[in-house]
Image (tube, rainbow, N blue to C red; front, side, top):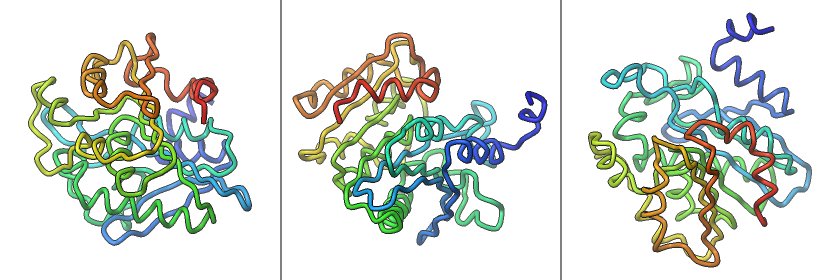
Length: 258
């Protein structure tokens, strides 16, 4: 089994994981990108929970971009598969998990400096609206892992879900690139501006105490002005950026009063 697992492609592994969680593949065509999703519907469920994937395999080396941003380990898919709510959908980022014939507008800058560009946000919004329509749900909760959390914040300002959850997410991309001395994401929107427009929705932002990619000190600094009765900051001291959000998500969900 280990040998067979090692032989599977990234897409095949994700599909296998989704099927084991009784989630079915749905390809969503938006005006700019074709997006891969996996869904599990419950008939007449008024609530849909949507999980957004992280940035994936964006870079081959620190200086060379990947030709395919499909993640090696789809953390947000693992999280979605461990959410036992009635209607749950996983939404991959542009150009992740899609076959060559569906790779529309897949320029590498959409997983580098334009990873949170307006057209990316618009495509994800269209996809979520399609998922809501197909599921028949009227209520929405958004959960985003890593860069998917950044996009969840940007989308929440437009969609106004009843809950916004981010996990290990850079919430101020200007501060984040400066922290790591990286090139600015000059073709992207900054989620910090959307935090200011988050309105009355309830929010919970999860950080890992050992996360070196999105350091907890930076997250605390960014979120401090927003913390109140409706916006919460939750730390898991033993977690880093990848471990152990997917593996322990069912346990973490029990800590949330939603």
